[in-house]
Structures are given as C-alpha cells and as structure tokens.
Length: 434
Ligand code: HEM
Image (cartoon, rainbow, N blue to C red; front, top):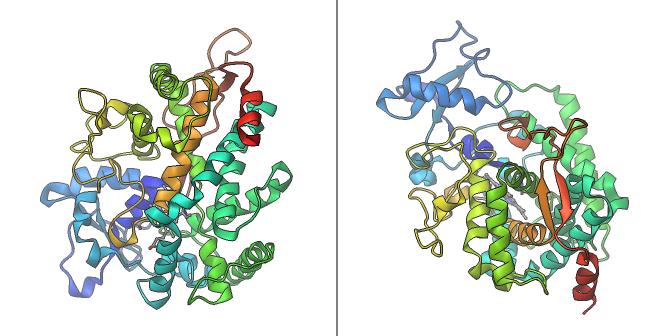
C-alpha cells in the first residue's frame, strides 16, 4: 500500500524531463534561478496544478515548472497515461526514495532490477486470485472491527485504522490480529507513511543526516515486524531487508473508509439506499459476505464514488460531470443493476490506484477490504450528524482535508454511529464462533 489518491494519481502524472533535450510546454513565469519554487504550494499542490491547467492548457493539459533548476512537466490529465510504459518510471526523489527509504521502497523505486523483483513478488502475493486467499481473514476482521466500534462508537475512526492495519499486518507479515493494546504499532505505521509522503512533495526539505537516521529506525521497525512471527517472511529473490521493506508498503485504506463515513453523513439518502439494498440481499439474519458482492451493485458504486470523490480534488469534468457531487448512480446504468465504467478509468471507474505498469500492486486486496468493511458498517450502523448543545446539527466539513504530502485524509469530523438493531454483538459472536 501506500498513499492515497488523486494525490499519487496526480504524482504519477508528474514526469521529469531533461530540459536540455526537450522543448518545454508553457508554464507560469518564475524568478531567475529559483523559477517557480515559491509558487508551488507545499500543501495540496495539485489544486494549483488544476488552476494552471486552465491557464496554460490551450495546447493540451500539459505545462512545465522550474523548481530551482529541476524541470517538472505536469501532465494534468489521466488520459495521457495511455503512454504509461514510457512515463511510468519515477523521478529522482532524493530524500524520499534514496535517503529515507534507501532505494528499496517500491513505490518510489526506479524501474530497475530491485523494483522488478519486488513487483514480481507483490504480484504473486496480491494478484486477483492470490488476493482471494485473504477474504476469510478480511471478513472476520471487518466483523471484529464492528465489535470494537460497539465498545465505544465515538472511536470509530481509530477502530477503522486499527482494523485495516491489522488486516495488512496479517497479510504481509503473518501477524495474528492486533488489538487495541497495539495502538503504538498503528501510530508508528501512520507516522512512517506521513513522513515519506511529505518528503516527496516538490520543495520538501529535511537534513540528510536526519533522513539517514530515520531510515535506520524504520529498517529496524520493519525487521522487528518481520521477526515477530516464528517464520520470517523472506520473499523469493529478495534480501531480508528488502523483504521487510516490501512488506512495509501499507496504505491507509482507513483514509478511504473515513471518506465513506463522511459521504454517508453528508448524504443520508445514499446511506438509506445502500442499507435497503443490503437488507434485501443479505437479510437481517446473517452478516454480509463476499458471496453477496455481485448482488450489491449500489454498494459497489458507492465505494467507487467515494474513491473518485475523495480525495480526488479537481478531476476532469469531461470524465465526471459535477465532480464535487456525490452520486453513486454515475457508476450504474438506468436499471441500477449493471455497472457503468466511464472511459479512460482503466476499467475501475476511478484512477485512485494509479496507472499502467506502476498501478497499485495491492488494489485487489484493498478493494476487498473496502467492500467487506463498508458492507459490514452499513449493515450494523446508521451514520448521523450529531447535534450541538443547542440542538443544531454539527455540519461535517465539506471540502476540508488534512494534507500530509501525497496522502490526503478528511479533516476530523463528528459522526454519530447508532446501532441498527440491538443484537448486533450477539449475531457477530454467533457467526464468528459458528
Ligand atoms: C485504498 C487503498 C489504496 C490506494 C488508494 C492505493 C493507491 C496506490 C497508488 C496511487 C499507487 C501508485 C500508482 C502509480 O504510480 O501509478 C500505489 C502503489 C502501490 N501500492 Fe497501493 N493503494 C492502496 C492500498 C494498497 C495496499 C493494501 C497494498 C498492499 C497490500 C498496496 C500496495 C502497493 C504497491 C506495492 C505499490 C507500488 C507499485 C509500484 O510502484 O510498482 N496498496 N498504490
């Protein structure tokens, strides 16, 4: 895994070229020597990129920037990624990919020998067939997460973070499911993701010595993760250190789940429609399972719409009209039964998992986790905006995010989760024991 969304999707569209050999597309005028360094915001730079696309996009959605001598060409449309075989290498992120992650963090690695070995292993572990072997674990984990939330519904976000981290740790290191006691592990993983995500943004700065110390620390952390189980994961053809770091690729699936909760809170009509579909297909006497997935088109559309909507920011209005609106129906035909996949979205309906040969290697695992957790959440809870002391609804933020470099999560918001029936815990226990 890794970072979320339009974020990486946009980053994937950033291609570094050597100015010497190319005639550059137009771009904003900058300062002598420093170029556009002070014009590119360190937070959510893709919003600025979208503005520049409108200004300099007369000859196509491409413009160039000069970051103190480093030339960046921004391809501001995912359609250009049809040529991903030539554009799929990574630019040189000295701090993020060479110092902090020692050249062995797959997402930032150049398309060389180490990346090819890691990609092969990741494919073996997470291709569509291989990902199916994790389904039973993910289903059980999603039900256990509901039990965790029942203990304290106001801690739903922490429970989702812990639940998704637990799934990934089981899948990649073979750990038994972590519990609330292991909160520090979850915190460390999130801190790790945030640090490398922040270091990759153009203009981000960190002392080299500091970066090297972090790398040592993170290596110790991943190797300790790997050492915790009796049989260490040692992937074929990779060193122990490379294996430990490969397994360290974790994305905050939990950020996407928080976005689902935000969407449900803002759109009660969507929540009711999804719950009605689940009740009709799953019934109220058993829990949702992967066997129900093919019969839940609205739920599938809701998840696709969440991945498209947040943290998508400015997306191509020519692909998705009214991009800010939350409309799961855009992924369904007029019967509401058959999926509609807009063109240029790689058969998925959104581009959150990236493109071409660098497309997210964990996307099938991530999609499984999202499906079963969202199905379980909607089966168990209603999501409502809480009221303040004067009885006025505490409106959730509509477009506020926490930007941590290339990872974007919704700003904290209040959501009241209430049980849809009183015997949820008993039913879950019965299913888990049976
Ligand atoms: C909702 C959850 C997730 C999202 C939105 C996501 C998104 C992404 C994106 C945008 C990329 C970069 C693609 C590109 O450069 O074109 C990526 C790469 C990657 N992701 Fe994920 N990811 C998620 C979950 C996961 C999980 C759970 C795993 C592993 C179990 C995973 C493993 C990877 C790997 C190994 C890469 C590197 C691929 C490469 O560079 O060749 N991802 N992910």
